[in-house]
Image 1 (tube, rainbow, N blue to C red):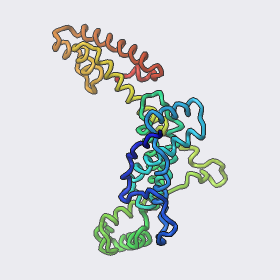
Image 2 (cartoon, rainbow, N blue to C red):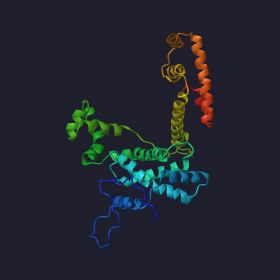
Image 3 (cartoon, rainbow, N blue to C red):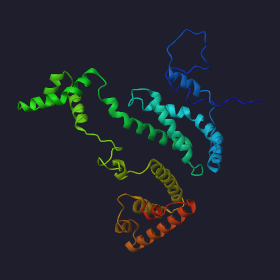
Image 4 (cartoon, rainbow, N blue to C red):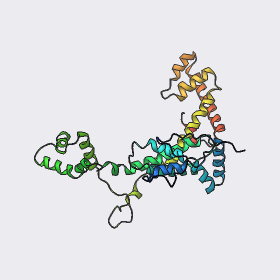
Length: 315
């Protein structure tokens, strides 16, 4: 006898409930809505229980298979929609654009996820989904903001010319004066002025007319990649959890030294702690050194692949 399918946590995902069945061909003709159709389609895919999901993720890491990836992706499509809708206030255009980018992030999360880290997959995947959605919004922000209304188009084509005309007459083109000229708010004048003041250069353009080297090839990569950022965040969360467990085995005095001296952003001096426990500064230093060795050995045992720099830095 088959068991009932798990309750859908995203049942109230949209204000309008997704239809349970395919609309009848005899229904009155209504405008085609791609979003509602997409929501209807993804509701047909079953959700996985945590145990099923972990099992599939483990199998996928051991042997990547397109069928396993398909099951993992389709079971998490509603998570992507939920996150995309949270970003809709920033992107007032087609919501399906955000969903599409989020789906790419979901696929990346499945490729990079390590089921043996002890992190919930939906929590890990949400970072990748949000990263891809944010990148899409950032890449397309200016296209959305400039010239979306008649007043903005008027500003876009005439603001710079009007400022030049006033300056030629010896008049300071302040936002208030310009806002009265174009019948818009001062805020709109300032925003458009800032956009027009930015110059853009294609990163694919050559650095010189006869050069085969483009601009993007010589840009330094200052920021960490999304993969490295997520990996660092995941490791830090595990690191904090292990430290809390480590503290449970300390004496009250060791706990105070650990928190006030090792973990604190502004640690107490050896003298302050010596006065508190009525011992010498040297004794506190010895206890601190002993604790550092103890926590290092504990972390090396609990997290074998812990990076050396984590063991060298003060937690």
